[in-house]
Length: 230
Length: 230
DNA sequence: CAGGGTGATTAGACCCAGCTAATCTCTGGT
DNA sequence: ACCAGAGATTAGCTGGGTCTAATCACCCTG
Image (cartoon, rainbow over all chains, first blue to last red; front, side, top):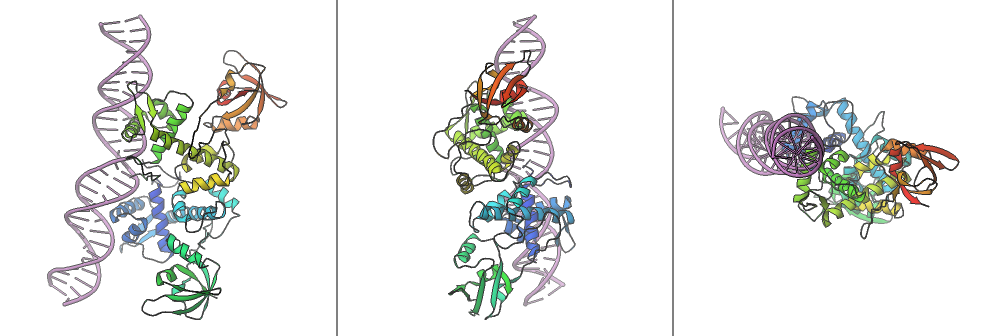
């Protein structure tokens, strides 16, 4: 049997790494209000669609998701609890790797992808304690509390902000290492305040000013940076 | 496929957690000069003997072990390199968990058993650096260097020391949490110096003095404590 | 030398997790 | 109304890792 990763005294499905990955990804897509489909999951998880089909069947059998008639995928209470747990560990680990081990924010995602399945509850608590119970990870993603309410709010993307606004960066999607490095080099990290100059037409870049410097951000980049007009 | 844990550009076998566990255990038994047999491995790994048989076949096919006529199991150069790597990560993680996350020495073994398969080379180096390149883990086990010579020396067990000696604890086998807790409560940890009083006959306890206090150690315990007559 | 016992392996089964190729289903356009 | 195409699923395969039950091999004893 592929090693079970968490011993949870709740439902009849073994919580392998693959299962946890899938739950976290469903949670992530749903949190961004993106459609949760087989193909979207397959792409995110970098596996073929049939692999996801099989996994979803297991998750459904294990009462972790439901699929209504319109094949809409939703986490059950149980499923969401687990997904939040995995997400919590993922983000705690990311924070830990940056703050304690000095990795850079573009390196931590893939490490956390593995470690999130390997840390026990005890360790999760220790890490949380050592970090002083952080509320956000280095990308600005909120860390779900062990118990209690959690909202996965994504503020507006930089791409849609009118020219002339001041924009406060809250959150940067952590999917792409290259992008993160590029953005960090230009000072675009959570907490930074930008001036949005103008957007070139025909899918052109967005001009922003960070401090004294101006940068032309590709639309793809402008869409991963989220925050509030300040 | 059960997730491959390390991408190693060397041989034709996938380095899954089970493979790494097996290699580390062979290394451990060999290091203690114990016979490396299918049944010994099965016991250590807590799996059934046929599972080990199948694993050994794969390891042999992957050139990680050899089996001579007398079914003597030996690590190849490659195999030993990997085994040392896993052992290094295991012991680094144990040290890290104690020194940085404040776990106690009896808690870290099982955590490290999982984490050793989940940390990348980059992380291994960071941990090593943060700890200041430690040479021994909390149980006194030497941490194999990334490159270079390594000896897995086990000094004499306390059980065999003549009465009246002063005994300096170097190393305590980390297999049994209960035992570790018991010993630590009595001040018997690496670096401690004991006075060996006498041994009761008929498999009775060994009397030792730690500081001002006397303790009667069961033979089983006396055998996991290793060190030098001082 | 025969028998018994121990330790290792083989046989046969199961589950998870991945793949490709084929099929099914549904929706939209002409 | 039909057909094309997209997306999902099924079918069928591979392989790791686990188990139990049965068998094999070998050694020691009587």
